[in-house]
View 1: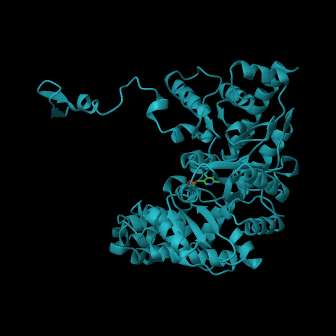
View 2 (view 1 turned 90 degrees about the vertical axis):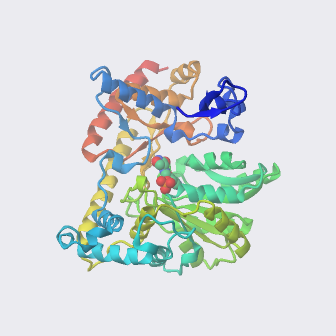
Length: 507
Ligand code: DCS
């Protein structure tokens, strides 16, 4: 135990007693101890249902057979590898070689790793000072890796990209934090977010002390984003004294899974231009597209194709290694591309990035460069890489469809198609008796349903109330990520539970 000398105590006092002189007493309430902005911040995808699931998991470990199921299935977060998705071999080979460059000197490596992964690892290491993944990098990320990402964006969009516009981040989350922090000057500043939304937005807006200005997606039109709704909510916020600074668009959508039509994207760009809003384009699911009649188009491409240049519109696009077919959530890689801001404002953003010392972990930076510049036709790894990629995406397409059909076949449930992303967001038309039973708990009706689902089946979903939803409607979000062979038993477990639940509460 560490001791310190202190006059108020006998000669030597344990350090925790010494510290207690400066810390509030243990009886202090959370409200007086913790910043109000932190208290206000909620993050449903890791909320109360998940805590309960963790308890049940412990119970299963200690007393197997004590619950009506033998495993907990975490369908609450988009964490593909936790549910068995394999990492893409080429990406992992390059990462392994970069992390342990000694392997590059060994002759056996040629037999174990593909020729192009060895070549790529050497090229990447040449771009890193000291040829080591253990270094701090430039505050925006390693220049050579940013150049590779920039060329990947150019190949995707057909428009020029400047490596200096890229900020490499530990996943997309820190970039989103940074932009929200930069833009919110007071509570009177607002950011428009879709409802339902991914709760990182409501959480960061609460943390940075601004106002979330909601706009509702139209469930009846496949979670359509209507410009008239944007205009209505913007005008309403302004008339309430809110200065709206930015518009968040998540495409493909989370939790809603829709993919915006090109025409719709054009209207959104025009709206931001007309109203002077920064467009925050969350494009982390750009590779998760499951329908043949729709494609992902980046907002940067749409803006430039419509003739809106850097001077016309401020646009920030977010991408992450956590999603797509790569699903490397724990590697923490991503970037934001920042265009249309003045040099002075860019300097402030750079200052924010610098405060973290190193823009993001180096392996995450490398992975972001690989994801945006994977093997090409003719490269040694290309065929194996394509087979892995297509295998994952076509399986996700099948899983999305089976789950969508299953939800739609349940009494009182309707579910829009997951055109993209990793989730379904079925609507629950619950009997009044169930709503009354939830009120007695008290909890939201969809949280009540999700809790009962967990207790009966071990399946963890997130209640719609955590994402926001049109008043009086109830939903839950489930991922499409469990392994394909587990989907039919999952569907059966949900069906059996749902039928019983509806029978119990039928009006
Ligand atoms: N943007 C969207 C739309 C997301 O869904 C997520 C993660 C992020 C950004 C940030 O992820 P990274 O920081 O890992 O890049 N989605 C969470 C979710 O809804 N389930 O799992 C993670």
